[in-house]
Image 1 (spheres, helix red, strand yellow):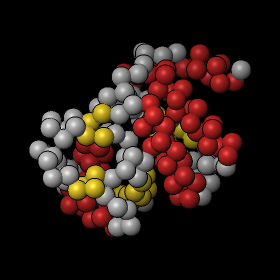
Image 2: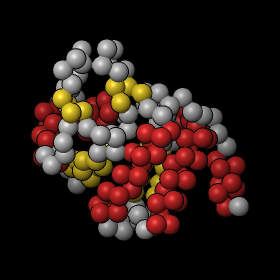
Image 3: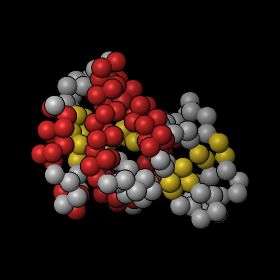
Image 4: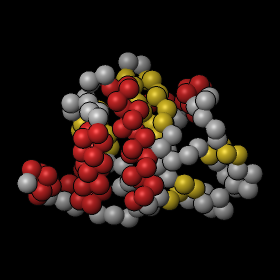
Length: 164
């Protein structure tokens, strides 16, 4: 998602988003990683959020995975995803102001969760419901699925499950 987001909204120019991230994360306490063989050397805790503006659109980016310092491969698990979503929902409450929130199906790409689409979808829905019961996030939350994920799950079954 990160690379696709950069390519789509910043034409791959890292400096523009880096400036916004630096401003957004100025009060966060990163950990500097000296032994990392590639990529950025600052690590932020799971769930750290940043509001990024692209023209009139606003995006909440959040830390979902950790990185293996030797090979720079990212990984995550259900517990990390749950924590990350919790912090995302907290930030969304502040930023959405009642406007709809659209969230891609996180955890389905390079994050290494290796869960079937239906399980990921149910995890995101359960997280949103749990958070909304504590305090409303926003009236409408949309979860985007890539076309190749439609073959993996029957959305009617998911809908029936959550309506029961």
